[in-house]
Length: 352
Image 1: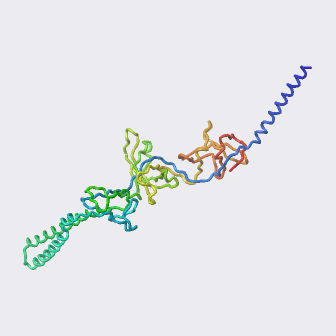
Image 2: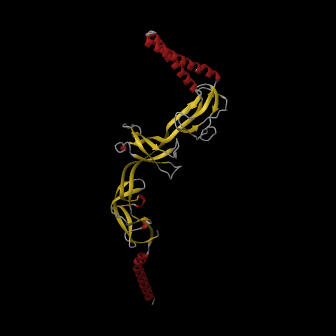
Image 3: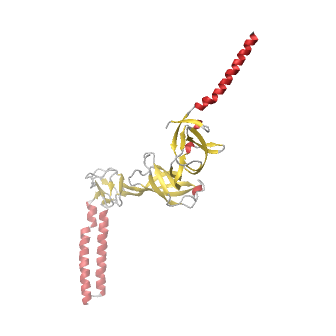
């Protein structure tokens, strides 16, 4: 009796196990793995060499006092208030005056101008007399020398007088403006203002040796800074050294940056992507969805609710994207997330 019961239990267990095995394929067949997909479209892709560096202004000048005198800051004609940090200036703008009566008197500009008038009048008189034979050639030349000396004296006096005017020689922005109490004495050599023109900027970069035959002058460059992540600025390669640094195995390059809206500031650390190749109207996919298998690079596309594994070949690549030259077609739907657990012909549910 016990033996019969034992045999019945064993038989029941075998039948139950067989039933479970028969159900497993059906259960797995009904499981739909959630995925997101994206329609494949033709677009552009760029291959670039990335580097970093500090940007410097295209124009920069430090204005210093050329004489020891009393200091007076001038007003910005655009705002009606004294010049301030960040103000835009034009070439020729008067930034400050340096007053010293003793210095001005020593220049004797008015006296020199009067002497010039007399010397010019005497020269014209001698020229007229020489034409009539009233004076010798020596007298005429002497009058001419006196005139030139008087003219030089006036020019020198005006140059000396210009030392009392601190004028910007360039268009730019005031980035440094030391404070001096109006009327206080400043010494010769004191900094009055520092002005930078950074509508155009440049950056020195060190590039890996392997790119010396790839990177060329005039190649376009995209530039970004972490403080302006949404804005991309553009520039170009303007200079390249033909020599390799034996210690770093790099060569020097210079990139010129267009900065019309002054988004970049002098001294900023920026990322530069030098574009060395570009293709338009090609299939481009995110690199993050490409799986490396023994058979090669693969991705998944969705067709009629099934995930189909595709072996692909890639062309141009950058840090985030890759061109697909074989294995995909326009308008197919490619899996962009949820692909990690997929196998060929897995059933999927599109959630986006």
